[in-house]
Length: 251
Image (cartoon, rainbow, N blue to C red; front, side, top):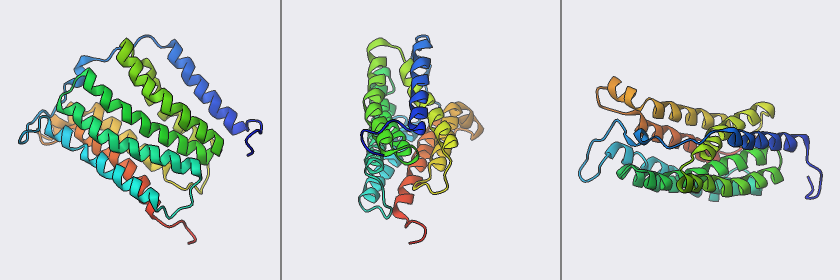
């Protein structure tokens, strides 16, 4: 599509979904950060590392982020420039999440949680830009990447400034719902990258996060859900990194 062409139906549908997200944010009441969120099930100390499982499990993000950036540099697949740029943001976001989340879990609090959530929004912007770049159009992907690289971090800073978490909630959960809707509404059999497995692992990560205490009790204090959340989310990134290293079908 040329730069000055009118929006396609798929681009208009993506804009409509984005507009619905804005409407949901406007209608939502103020959402405060529950302080109980910082109370994780596994608080065991290992050597000098407090909350060791939750801290050290973030090394999975660091490893996958580095692997993804390396694979992206020599990707065996032909990627559109906007998809490549979006994946760079995705893997960079994962890498930074490893450090930010590790810092947060060392000393859980609202101020340290900011450094956990900021890089997560960068990773999400990368996923959204890449999916729209493949499924909608290159300019749709570029617009989504640019907007979300601004709006995502802003949502975290907005929470820090106002105490209202609503915009971040809409971006995180509404964004995932939007991605599922886009994948369902624009079916294709030749995706360059495995988006559905990525979303599946992210969904499993959210389940593990919600079941932090339940898993801790069920395993007799061996494992807790939050550390498993980190590993599951990192595996989602690993699926994409692995696909970058594979040759396209027919080659």
